[in-house]
Image (cartoon, rainbow, N blue to C red):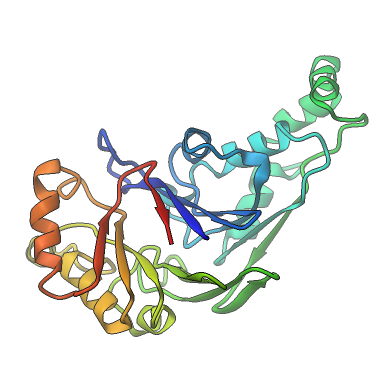
Length: 287
């Protein structure tokens, strides 16, 4: 059965319990990352997973709270490899290819100095051999692809479909993803305001993980409801899509307070009659 690991349940605002956005999805033998926010690589290991076993990474958009750990993940996954792992496949909206080149490109990549040293220095070569690798050590190889809405990946056990999400256009493109498996479907909204494209993507899904920045009336009063879902927006999208479970993620600093969790769920239940999951980092959800 698919399992969701909540790695980052927060926002750009750090709290003691949540910071940044990232998720791992296990479907059979496949391990998939969705976004790569603050400390994703470390949280991945704390969740009992390992970077070299991640073969797919999907970005919803390129705000830093969704991609800042990408250099760390790329270098760690490569550094811990023994040269026999699958090639990492990375998909996301515009900038995904540019950012990947900007990290790893041999001539212009900001972190190329690291892998070049590890490929060539005798110490790093010996560590690689001791780990099980065979020289010569190869540079990082990553397949990064800028994608548009529509089918993205199809395997024997799952498929991924992307749809537009409405966040901070025209400055950044944003996508939501649906993963269909024989044992159910999961939707990751990414950052979005309530919109028909995400509702259509999520129709009849078993679970939708939706951003929930703050209590709705607060957002409407302070103007932070533009490009984002709050409690009511998340609830109404889930109800319109008739999803079975609504997972609240990308939870802002106010809703991160333990005292607000119960009242937030009570408010959401006024608009959504399915099961509600208030996400916490390192939580595991079995579909």
